[in-house]
Length: 181
Length: 181
Length: 181
Image (cartoon, rainbow over all chains, first blue to last red; front, side):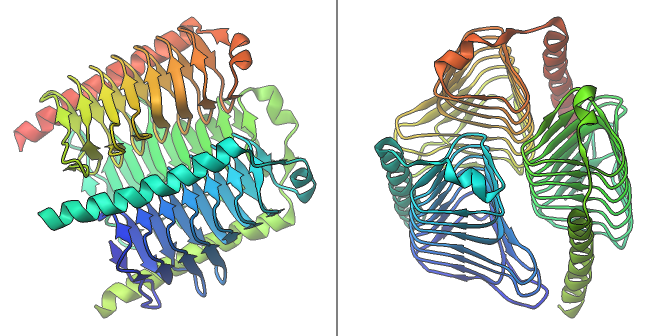
């Protein structure tokens, strides 16, 4: 469901994106090519001056919530996965090739490329360099805690690439299914 | 969507509240003036003898879930924010001026006024005095743990006031938008 | 809403189940007798070769998300409750009589019977023997951590039985309500 915000701004969505009819995409939102937005996701840019920009080949899975404070940006670069039920709240930038896990919360952060934030983690008010891993349930709310983070391992690199590919396949599958009807 | 519970009780909602058409408000629910209920929220009072009462100027953000056990009450006093994806389950009372963070869970609690429960925290089976702060990801499930909680700081006081005001502005904005159509 | 996956598979749902019209049930999903699926739940089996099977008398509460990796199964045995906002992701088997708490994440696990996983816990990549309890917010991601888990107490046994019964009563209540209309 595509909706206006109070300033009558409307989402700008690539024709190659696939958006569930049960997802809410509202206001000053830009969605790139081959983005999959799953069921009951909410992507809402309606605070004054806020915006949300989602790069190519991203997937925004079921029940994900994106929103931002007044005057803030959410920027999500290409090839990033937001897994089921995570929340990314602006101001927030996520680099390319990131994976945000189930139920994780990311708020007021600047996250580099290829960062993996695992399930139910909470990350707030920090800058995360590229290629770091935040573990399941970990809480990172000050910059000192960032120092101790591990680098991504090859298993997680493969996992996050497989999630991107699986969701690109879903776009193709659902687009073909709609054409057959 | 306003729905009956099995006892045919229906929500009682102030005319000045703004309820997303994708939110579920069901059964023995009372919603006060100037309450904003965002997308995909579920406010469900359908266990026998359960009720949910939400005071004036509250906001119930996207994907929030309110429900209660049989015979229990959820009471949320004025000027309280339930942020994206949190769960408040009865029996539970939240005082006025509280902020419940993204993905937090509050169950079987009696929470005072001006309490801030941050993101992904879990609070169960305790009484929280007014003006305390529960940190991101913190787990509070016995009364002894409550003793160590800090008092709210001025930054959080300002933050929680700004959330209330931003949501009151959204009600005005969406009401004006609907009138123009 | 019942939907096909790209392979044109459709859910197979017992006539005695009660599915909210706002829930998404999609693809290779089998739902047994007397299952309650609440509002905004997503039960999606659409990765190639994936399946989801839910046994009799289960309840899948508001905002729950079930999904599985390509080629994986989610199996949930009889009399298990998935409480509000939890996420169970395949590959995953849950035994009978389990309770998964609010906002909990369970992924890539083999869980025995009568296991209680409390609120906002994260459990990944492990085997949990029957009758164990995982506490609120606990993170269990290696098999050694499973050794230290407590056995279920009688209070939790009573609680999880009461949740099953309350949801069976809801099915009866909502079915009767629909018949009266």
